[in-house]
Length: 299
Image 1 (cartoon, rainbow, N blue to C red):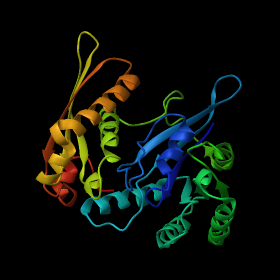
Image 2 (cartoon, helix red, strand yellow; image 1 turned 135 degrees about the vertical axis):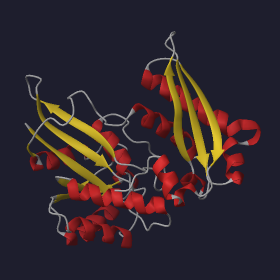
Image 3 (cartoon, rainbow, N blue to C red; image 1 turned 135 degrees about the horizontal axis):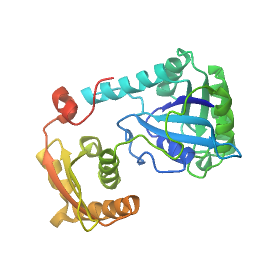
Image 4 (cartoon, rainbow, N blue to C red; image 1 turned 30 degrees about the horizontal axis):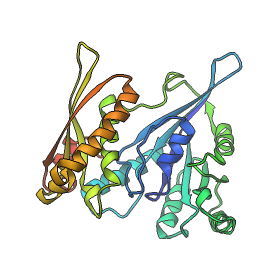
């Protein structure tokens, strides 16, 4: 069979995670209009079966954090993860936004991507929100980068996704089945739970607060009656942020917790008792030891 790892890279908020979720057919990564929603390397698995039902090819999509100008130690670590993924991938999907002009950030990533030996497929995403002229302009400007192929896509609507798979499949080489054919992600259960909880806060928080928030699952227990009891710590950087995350009379904490519990029950197929606590770890994004404890390892 044929298989390979494909790094999905681009600036923050160009729709990388939405694209990976669409290609895999499952929610692999949380999504948000907030930049830098993805904070780790997340692998989504697409396995195709032949007419006899046997796997004949497998693409492991590596969803990466958005490349950006780092302002904290965490930012440095996230960029390092992206560069490491580029070096280890068999092919690269470089995503730009059809609704925003090509900018310095895109050009910097283009230079980085061009320096790796792997073939590159450029995706112009969010075509559902852009006019035909905008899409043509993006494709024309990106053509100067001379990548292997160019595909306009709407990850949200699914347009162009089959064409993208058609470009990626021939790039696969003979290789092993890296993941079981029915597996679609490599994330540990605790990581999935923490990210679902964090997602419920992102759209409701303003300014820099979404970047200051991280969730850590402290306890996960399946009870005799089938109930799953989850205790999670919602961590912020300052005491003033704690009150915002809790909300007036606990309103935001209750709302986000309820939404997270419903999604977790659908995911786990059982009742969930979710207990959230909000705590403060001052300037955790700038403290290497704290980043290690939270799982943000150096590349």
